[in-house]
Length: 245
Image (cartoon, rainbow, N blue to C red; front, side, top):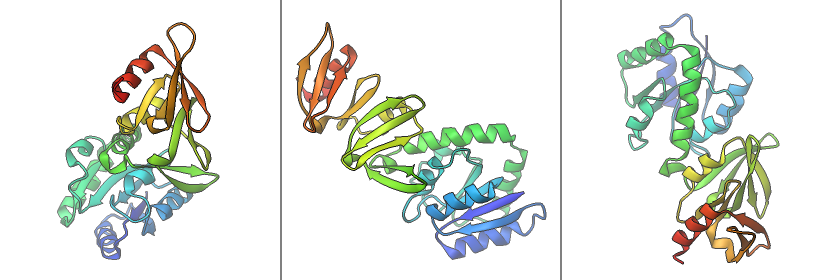
């Protein structure tokens, strides 16, 4: 079975590699020093297991997982307790807090081997969604654009628009797609800056220049960038609460 180690510390990668030597059925096919390399390696090798650090340069471990369509089983190995161990221990196969012993590492590997692959897929997706709405990731969105990884600071987002299985992210630099739901972004974004004004629209409230009545109980939000977006009855109530009107 194929294993990839992703950690920005060479020493940490070396320790994991050494611990894995006890397992003749596991082969380390790649070591990566950051999340960009990790995405490429996972796509290339389709590993069965990834030993993953969370806090890394460029993009963190959670953001890296968001970019992978069918993520493999994950064992986290990190020095940072603040990444809410309690929130993630039920989703990841295991969570190793550095420094960890060989015995603790072996326990994690055995736990992974006993976990059904189908369950691993489900818990990995749940983990990614839980992590993405954590405070550490509220300030930016990481996505793939024409095969390249793009990082969008949330303050640059004008509004989100539902588009079938994707969400369109509208910015001054263009429109980008991410394979998530509107509900996901509604939970992820800071409620003081973004409001779900309609089932298909989540808007940056700082761009709203005025609100105009429309048909029946609906309204239109006029943005300073010239865009007019529908506001549902429920969305209007949310807007009034946030804007204090």
